[in-house]
Length: 179
Image 1 (cartoon, rainbow, N blue to C red):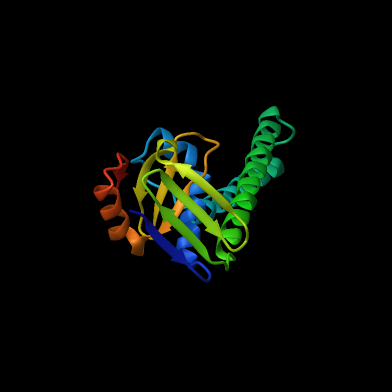
Image 2 (cartoon, rainbow, N blue to C red):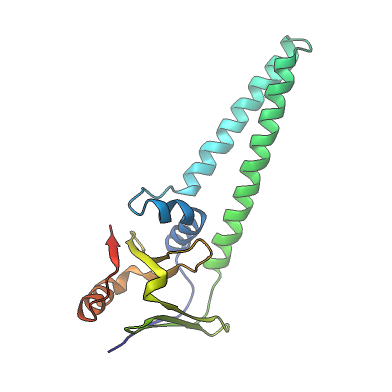
């Protein structure tokens, strides 16, 4: 028996954000499957506000505290932290925009051997059940998280949850379901 799921058209913003959040935190999810997923949108908002406050603090130190070593250490720490925040923000936006702008037909075939993913864009791969650590249930998607950090996570829209659960149960596939 097999289960065939087809997705056409673009992804919703909520689904794209959720997928991008999972991609950014995949390593942490692999080590702790039930960990709370951080929403990067709010993380970056808080981060940029914090950087603004730190910049004001450094400017005050520069204006009222002449040439002390602490000033240069704080300024260096601020610059490094800001650079890392901007770098991860750019990476997150790239992942998010890529997922959001996907406008292709995707066919996912679930069999007793694994999951086969085919898209109109030519992305085709097959992942065996032994390469999947667990399935995480999120508000907008189901994510099949790989056992290896270099593996591919497979996302399924949440509307297919019942079909996927029935298939896993009927085929007796020993995948841990989290959430």
